Image (cartoon, rainbow, N blue to C red; front, side, top):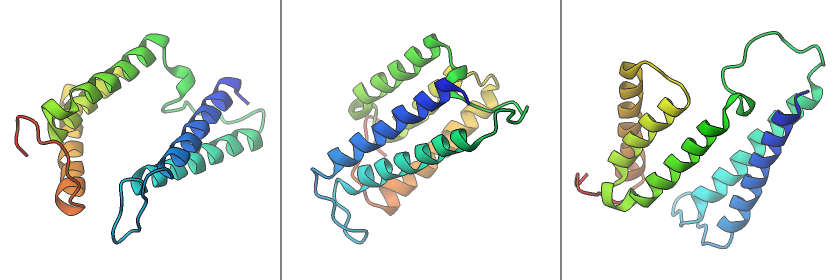
Length: 154
């Protein structure tokens, strides 16, 4: 059982609790007429469930464990990657209104994939574009959530 993974799971669980508590201060609405607090409420619950399952898996995992290499783990990130990761999130939040949702999400995915070590630019650009387009149609077109258009005008 890796101590760093347990701590990481507990931190994510705490973020889920805080998100859930803060979202309950906003109007939640229902699924037919969602209010501003519904999405953060569902996100907080999802964070708590997934991190809880992760922590339980760590507790019930045998000490021998599997020798498979993990695809991604918080313990494998270098401190500089974490700083760049959170810095990118802060910058994206700061310029969200000016750049607009589609461009911000596209650039954010590019930056985060590079920070996490993805080296193939074709894959990065394709995944960023597909993610931005799908999320734009999901949130703006289908769910009719008013998101900033920025200078692109979408």
